[in-house]
Image 1 (cartoon, one colour):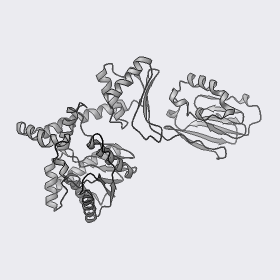
Image 2 (cartoon, rainbow, N blue to C red; image 1 turned 60 degrees about the horizontal axis):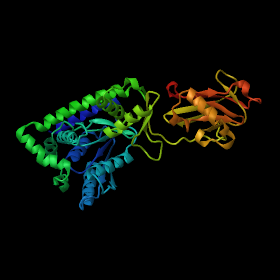
Image 3 (cartoon, rainbow, N blue to C red; image 1 turned 90 degrees about the vertical axis):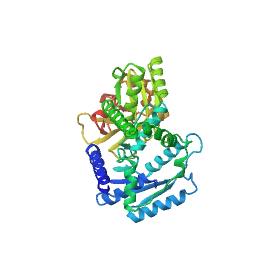
Image 4 (cartoon, rainbow, N blue to C red; image 1 turned 180 degrees about the vertical axis):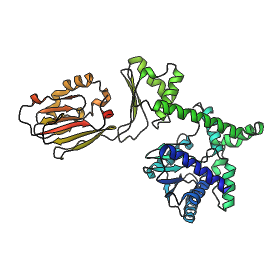
Length: 434
């Protein structure tokens, strides 16, 4: 039994490494229940010599015993030699309590994940079957739980997803390890608990292998979804609308897979239908996606018969006149490089006075007369409208020097001897506008 779980972990990590490389650290989501406890114990016994580890326990503060559960998790980790971080979660008390708790939990995970981390989650075969059935009954499509994927700066992995829960509890009993039984798991007013305690037993009495069968169908559905994601996700962030299917249902499937490949998994049919309604009505459309509200929000646009995906990003921060060159300026998912040249070389531009990077939204009074000219040049270069307001504009003492990738001032238009020369370029050929 012990060997079986260790082999399952080895196989799951090997498959993950084939696609994403070996993780730098294993982070175990530890609720204290049997599933996550078995994951922590097995990982610490079998993998601690190969990877640094961290356990994360989120206290939802929804049960009077939650403080004792957190202490149980601390003691368990101390005995196994695994560091643990406990967080007090704030769960919204309105709406869907299960969804709110899950959202708070994942926000807590994201706070502690670092680049290269792999978050291990304890969901097992019965969880997969219940989730597949529940989502289908809710009209969300019979979507499977994903076995792995991106999560913030790291990844997540569910190594137990095809493992029967009985194997996990038997393993803990053999190891002499206790776990927490949350009494709320017995409350059938929660949809998942109703399925677990009333629907699934009835199904199993009629079809003995109902749980494994549903989990197998879910795994097949998940594999098909992942395959579609790999195809549509490879098309890039700008896609001709002619590549999209024609029927409403197929468009939903296509767009959902396209967005899932960019880590947007909770997109409703209503939002997709509204995007297409806007496009059919005016030829333009916009869908805001969940993101960090303190930065540029991710969004999906349709403009000039092309679909554009814009990832989230920080608000542009331009260098000051006094900052020495070279400048490497992040803009959206691109980098603008402005380097000093001592002599005239191919592509170098002469400038007068000091260089400055501005945007149309931050145009100072002395440059506001350029508005009409900028609009015309943006249109000619087919720069999408939503990129124009913060598009980097390079100026000197005589005015606009360059709209990178769009236009640059001719050398003959400089009214005085150049102060210096610079080369302005996007860091990658594919990073320019368009």
